[in-house]
Each structure stands twice: as C-alpha cells, then as structure tokens.
Image (cartoon, rainbow, N blue to C red; front, side, top):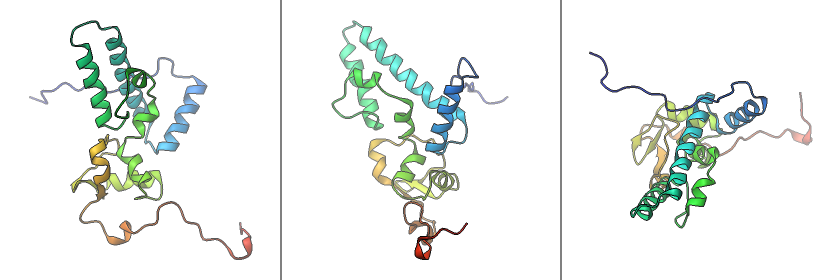
Length: 181
C-alpha cells in the first residue's frame, strides 16, 4: 500500500538560482556551521520566514485572543532558545537564519568543546557518539531546546579517549619559531 503520510519539501529554494552574492553568502554560512549542503540553509531560512510571517499576522490581528497567541509564539521561541524571556514581537521580526543555525545540535556540540571542529561535531553525531539526557541523537540538524542544552553529552558506549579531547585545534609549535614547509 505504501506510506500513508504525504512527504513534502521542508524548504523553499531561492527564486533566482544564479545570484553571485547569495551564493557566496551561502558558502560562507556552510563553512561556518559545517553544513552538508545548501538545502540545510534553505530549511533554516524557510523556518525563520514562517516564524516571522506568523509574527506579522499577529501584529495585524485584532481578535480577542491576540495576546494569548502572541504569548504562545514567544513562549515557543523562548523554549527553543531563540529569544530571551522578556522578548517582544519586534524581536521575532529581527530573527535571522543564523539564529536558527545556532540552535542546531551540531553547532552546540562544537561550542561546548566536545569536538575539535564543526565537521567533527557532525561526524560524532551521525556516528551515534552524542546523546541528550542519555538518549542517542543522530541528527545534526536537531534543534536543541533550552532545557536540553545542559544535558548534551557523550553516549554511554563512547571510549574515554574521545571524551578527553581538548577543545579546539592544537598544533605543535616548532622549536625556535620557524615553520618548516
């Protein structure tokens, strides 16, 4: 019979595929966040676009439950760590794609110093070495909630040698300050 749910794209592609400035910006973001392809950027852009669109709708909404809906939106964004606790709709409208990419598991593993590079963080996650609250997570694009952030750790079967890696790249310095090439 097949799968009953209907699969849909979770992103919108750029309207014009060959804009040099956009392509260079995407390459810079891909390198900074260790992304596999541009589709991951487009997913983040689409999510931010949807959130901002919802905020604009709420600004124009004049129903009696407007304040409740605004509070729900701000609460949801606070729980995933995108906004501070006392945020307003203007803060929602100023969100950027990089704000979403900062909440990815891959970025947080790197920033916590559990991997030497952002790409190594992705590798650790995909290979099943990272867990959140003891539960293995193998999706680098997993959006980490604020309450889960301090529960990120190594999975129970990870060798101690990987857990004791120093944060950041360490290059041995040659004697005398000379660089041999």
